[in-house]
Amino acid sequence: MIIKSPPLLTPAEASELTGYYTGTLAKLERTGVITAVRTPLGHRRYHAESIQALIIERGRIVARPVPIRLDGCTCQAIAGSHAHGCPWSAR
Image (cartoon, helix red, strand yellow):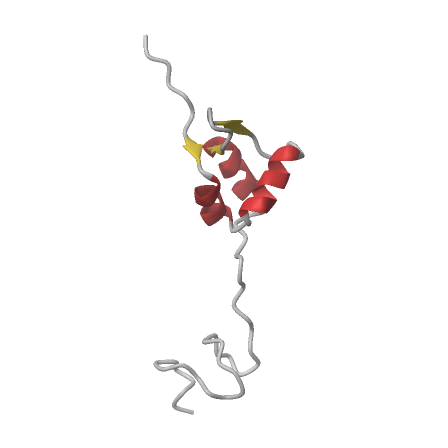
């Protein structure tokens, strides 16, 4: 009989999926919001189901939100100098 274990994610993988820093994920694990197991060397591995539930509950968080500009551009240009290929650069 083969026993399947649930899929596990490294902190980096969970961070990429959620947008949370790895330190924040560790805090969420300590407070019981998500679950994790430890490898024999003591490294965290998060249960994929727990991370999926976090994404569903709180939504995916973008680590660096794109600023909203009054001129409608999202290329993050400063003081009217727009990035190459930006539709607003021709103005």
